[in-house]
Image (cartoon, rainbow, N blue to C red; front, side):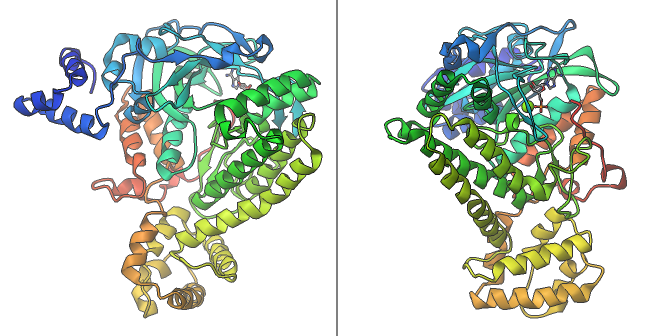
Amino acid sequence: MLAGQEGSLVFVTELARHPLCWLAAKLSPDPAMAILVHTMLKRGMRSLRTLEELSLDNTYARLPEAFYSKLQPTPFSSPTYLISFNPAAAELIDLDPAQAARPEFAGVFGGSMLAPGMEPLAMLYSGHQFGVYVSQLGDGRAILLGEARNERGEKWDLQLKGAGRTPFSREGDGRAVLRSTIREYLCSEAMHGLGIPTTRALCIVGSDDQVYREQVETGAIVLRMAPSHVRFGSFEIFYYRKQYEQLKVLADYVIGQHYPHLVEAADKYARFFSEVMARTARLIAQWQAVGWSHGVMNTDNMSILGITLDYGPFGFMDDYDPGFICNHSDHSGRYAFNQQPYIGLWNLSCLAQALLPLAEKDELKGALDRYTPMCEGRYIELMRAKCGLIETKEEDALLIQDLLALMHQHHVDYTIFFRTLSTFQTGSASLNEPLRNFFLDRGAFDQWAVRYEARLREEGSRDEERAVRMNRVNPKYVLRNYLAQTAIERAQQKDFSEVDRVLALLRNPYSEQSGMETYAAAPPNWGKHLSVSCSS
Ligand code: AMP
Ligand code: MG
């Protein structure tokens, strides 16, 4: 969309700054003006910024030097080009979308130029990987460029992923391959569309540089955004090094920046932990309800803000399988789908351990004890909503559990089934043929349906009203591996349109989108068991 339109985009940008732009647009015969007016109205006439005008700071760079390593991104040796740009993320930092057409855009977000105020650094952290403490990790291929503050005062880290080696790269090459950047880009935006807290992604910049994984691939960089990239492991490193002064500096920084209401509290560190615990519990309940697995829930991949962080071998499950392991390299199933709530607790225990020098043990333990009821409670609330139930009844847990057991036994597609469940009609089993057809043993489903119908009647549920409500919480479209794979394979052939198409589709996963029916389908045979590993 952007190439070749630079002239008119400059004009559009200039107009956008002018308070009478909408009037100018009305008078103009150019349809681009109508689009501009719409965009401006939607944004409430917010002023949009150029790359040079991004209000950049880097508060992390003011922390002691031990917290990071300052360095420059390493440019690719071949020319870079913009693969995809996400206007929804640009909006978060008030960046004018027209900026994406400038060569400087691919320069800055492709690691060869810096915009004013950028102060690049790689963050230090450690973490428990697959249950084992690794004493030093850190950003091995991520570089924090700086923090943009939007007009609403929100702060967003701008981080390049795949911009070359850092002192923390260990034996890695500091690069990300096109395949993994597309997966992260699409999935983080898909999660946001689903209403799940997550890092965001502004763009992907590609190059023809070769990067060696299982096979030769090309390198790319994804620009990731988050209010903070601090992880559980950022705390663990200072605890295990017995650098409790640094630990306190980090905790005070995170509380000051992201939990400001706690700054004055006497027991602020324990309360901070309690809030991280609650956010993590709610996050993991959301993953479970949507049928999503992270794949590498190491403590260095756990966000201190309770957002989904570090997309590697993640996966939305197709057929419901509680033992689903999305990561080909996870031989023991440590991070299997049904382990995620427990692993959340395990990881929080690691964080609690690291906070011991700052907070009372009993208070930390008390917060840990609240985790499981909170995660399970939120999960059941979400599942109740997926089933269209409003009232809270003790027996709902069993009703839902029995449905899931049936779905597992009959290899029922998780997303499609719940979307279709909104068509359930009270009255007669014959009305529910589309739902019965998911199950080989229709009688088994009928037995469950009798209980479901009785439960619906108990709360006076009306079919039509319930269907509308259910379609707002049961997505029609999720980023199945095969959809990501199709976009990747086209992009590897230099056709980036599928990336943009899937990005736009997943922005509104709960809406029916005309002409996009095939994207809601279960995977074709080739896409059923795609192998996704840590290699990215
Ligand atoms: P992950 O669990 O994939 O987020 O990565 C674990 C650690 O390995 C982190 O410290 C990453 O920065 C680092 N890492 C992963 N891939 C690379 C790479 N290609 N080059 C350098 N470091 C990497
Ligand atoms: Mg990581």
